[in-house]
Length: 282
Image (cartoon, rainbow, N blue to C red; front, side, top):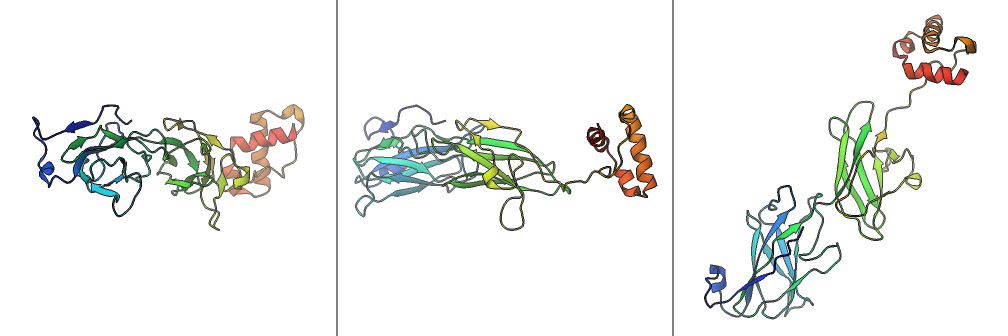
């Protein structure tokens, strides 16, 4: 998370300032380093934009834009005696946006000010990992399945299942009023989802997953998108209750399927099919 260390001011007396501070003394400079929470923490791609926002954006006090180097550092020339809030433009779907010094999405963060000729070294600026929702999706063919977590008024956070049907939706950012997520799986062919957790064909029937912080990691949000299978014993006559053991019911079921020349169903007959048959006839 954002380090609590205080910003450091470097003046022209007694301390060797970076070469950048040798610019004409009509501005100040702000130096910082952006990192993405790990583990371990690591810098974003070089060239990531960092915005320094004044209290009021105008021609006289414009937003200052800097870019990071390979190690995440940036240097910005700023107007003296103007308070700037620092925000990194990182949208990787894993980390959540935070202004430097802020603890929630819409909080303004810490305001930093320098005088003419001064250089301010900011505390370490670490963008936190978001909360996660993960699970497993069963399909007929094992093909990748789109999965999304939806929050009204904020939209969708998307991912896709891997070769094992596993998925993790990352970078979720619960805040008061926006902490209930519903998860959709697959495609219905008309631009919607085939299923919503838990086992609902519509969004209205979805069960919400409530996250309380960006440290939450909810697991077991699973879905089964396999084509429903018809039990081949649905039309089989019931046996006498005295013979309804699993072994006897299985033998009778196989004999029934052979007698009806349903060899394909015989090959795919499962223990669950027989148990359903016993339950129906009990």
